[in-house]
Image (cartoon, rainbow, N blue to C red; front, side, top):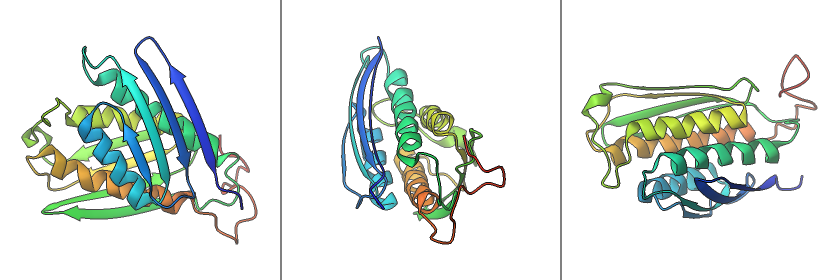
Length: 201
């Protein structure tokens, strides 16, 4: 099977993003978004998901991080959708629970063609922002953009949380990478599209 690769370029008045994804990679990442904590989280996502990911993004960070953060989720979702093609043979479902200190993040995904996401945390108001202004709501916007563009159901639960945003988010991105690695793997027993409808949009 050929490696499933997608190159996406998206330029708006707010952001200019180039992204290359190889689902069948080895965990190599080269990330430059201008948002330090997001760079780190995406490196962890790629490493533990065993995918190769290159992202170069320029955005209106002098205004705030919102557009850049959200648009990277959008473009990553577009890349997954393009690289997966008709989705023949994939396992479709994936799940992972990852700890970091006292935090446990559980991520469950379904490449269903029906985009939804939930991001549920125990006592989210106790988590502080990162030094660059990144907050839990920004992570939620990232996951929403990814889910909508990829056509995937992403369910995230974190309990308990840590007051440090880094410690709370790191296991989430690791678990998301592992869950997506599972869901995108090809099962040799599956000869067609993994839906009784015969199609996944």
